[in-house]
Amino acid sequence: MIEWANTIIQGILTGGLYAMFATGLAIIFGVMRLVNITHGDLIVLAAFIAMVVIETTGFNPFLSLIIVLPIMFIIGYFLQRGILNYTLGDDLLPPLLVTFGLSIVIQNVLLEVFSADSQRLKAGAIETSSIQLTDGLSIGIFPLITLLTAVTMIILLQQLFNRTRLGRAFRATSDDPTTAQLMGINHKHIFGLAMGLALGLVAIAGVLMAVRSNFDPSIGPAKLLYAFEAVIIGGLGSLWGTLIGGIILGVAQNIGAKIDPGWQILAGHIAFLIILVFRPNGLFPRTRDD
Amino acid sequence: MTDYIQNNSVTSFKVVRSTPASRIGSIIGLILLIILVSFPNWGDRATIRLFVEIFYILALAQMWNLLAGFGGLVSVGQQAFIGLGGYTLFILTINFGIGAIWAIPLSGLICALISLPIAFLVFRLRGHYFAIGTWVVAEVFLLGFAQIQSLGGGSGKSLPIAIVKSISDSRAGREAAIYWTALFVVVATIAIVYFLLRSRHGLALTAIRDSEEASNSLGVDNFKAKLLVYIFAAFGTATIGALIFLTKLRISPSAAFDINWTTTVIFIVVIGGIGTIEGPILGTIIYFLLREPLSDFGTWYLILLGATAVIVMLKAPQGIWGIITNRFDLRLFPVQRRLKLKTDK
Image 1 (cartoon, rainbow over the protein chains, first blue to last red):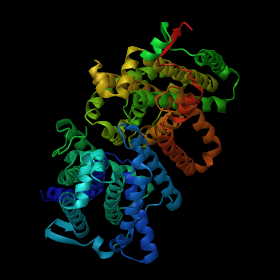
Image 2 (image 1 turned 90 degrees about the vertical axis):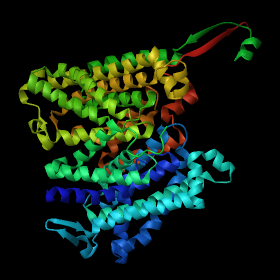
Image 3 (image 1 turned 135 degrees about the vertical axis):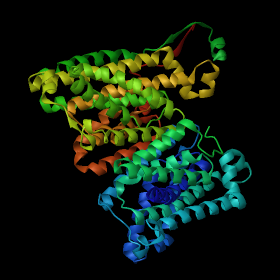
Image 4 (image 1 turned 180 degrees about the vertical axis):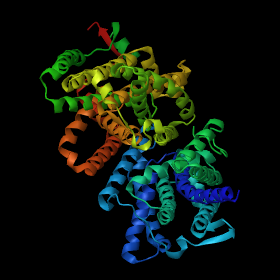
């Protein structure tokens, strides 16, 4: 019994990381109606940038974010304004195929620069320390920090979207870019800022991932799929739904892994497909994608 | 148009599809086909093998183009059907003793049946999400097949020598048989796509691609049309997958359900020209021409292809073939109807 409780608790904590992957994707879709296939590779890119920053400055991974986060924000802003803004429109093909092409480019550039070696960021004692709840039941400090970060980010994002001028501009542009323009909003700039914001979240997610597990240039697509599944399970347009989606995915994976290590990722995908059958709009849908 | 008709006193009109280029093209195509059919009799073995690969990649590209370019169903998970086709062929030949060549189309049919429940799942996701949903399904097959011990699990399975020998006793005979099968598959694929697009269903597909609402209001059943395309593409892709793994003689989940199949095909179709039959042909030629000299630079070749696809999508979404048709009005596989007016003057 205690073993299963442990499995579920670890799953919830893993879910925090998946929710971090997913919030960026959810914002990109929410504001730009764009599904970014590069998302996973950008998470990996952020991890590698953090690795370089740590190697050159000697910062610990958390501190490295003061450099990595602005870099990712700038990459996001210019990615949107320089490339992705030109793909937006009624046709689905350009954004999908452009982000797919970029995904392959980023993966292979990372492979060329950093080789296929597995990497990991070292955060010191915090990586392994844990709180002992009862006998056989403990919570890792680092996974807990990850989950709390995800919760904090979602609270901050909701404040941003609901209470600030920028948030209002995001929502207005998302509802109707043309009318937003008439009200004096430069929608291209707003889209750039939204992508910058999303990649800021990606920076945090990338560093958290890189401390927690090994990473190499090829793992981006797997992270994209987790993020995507968390968003769909939660329901489009709901950030708290995304968190729940990430947690369901994390729990499903941990239960799968407990039954058989080969079933870990498979169990997550199957949980996603089951929810798709019974609740095609996700558990907490707010907006429809059509 | 009405002004034009009035001012020029049009006496009659007719709807044409063939163009001079398409008539010359079909003659050249026929000559090329004769050369290709006779090739195993005089070509060398390495080139025969290269041609087999070109044929199946081109056939895959045509199938993906039908799905995405004409059906508007952008799937990033067609490797699901390549792998399923391959595994079905292995099961049919090893466990049921069906002849290797006949098992190829049979695998396609079986996978078309399997595609029905898959369609039920992925069709719940619209537009962009459909793309990633198909990818998840492909991953499920990859991970799932790795768990099936009777199929070799993660390390895969080889085709027994007896089955390989049953195609032909000699190595040259086998290679020729596979070559002709591959040639047949690619020619049949292009022919079927061509005639499908010229049919009523093709017109419906083009209408859906241009505007879902408008085609729906004119009585096209969008869902049914898309479902048919999806199932047909699954049949075609699985048939090609069966052929691929018959040539490779060995199958493993990571090779069978590899996303790189789809990546390659997407780049070929986008660079060549999406939504045309000529585009994938041109794209395949470019892909193999560049691959031979650049194969030593594996990563850089992929970076180059990816960057080219991005630039093409941004600057010339109709691809290289689109640029050619716009400039020279050249159509080798005319699927669109064009109005020719006859006037008194």
